[in-house]
Picture 1: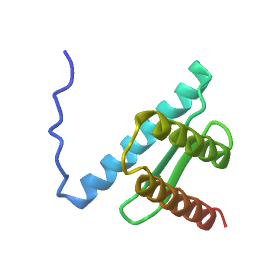
Picture 2 (picture 1 turned 180 degrees about the vertical axis):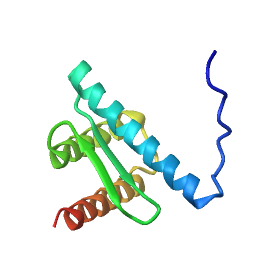
Picture 3 (picture 1 turned 135 degrees about the vertical axis):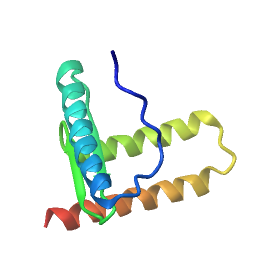
Picture 4 (picture 1 turned 30 degrees about the vertical axis):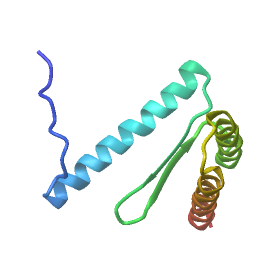
Length: 108
């Protein structure tokens, strides 16, 4: 007999929410590690808690993976024929820079 289906909505009780976050975060980090080992995949996972604490996993260098992502996202934009390409590129660059700043701040 399987587990019951969880209703996806915000957990109102702070303690239960924190416990659930911790368990699911650890499970997600474990799955990311397993995927990288079993499938020889390059995996990068970034999680921010509600308080802004950073949790991350990278099977190789996080910076190299982010740079690779950046290059691939540009290539995908070229093939999709996006009409508002410049605006989307600028938004993505700002998001990547923000992530890099957060990573360097947490690494210090």
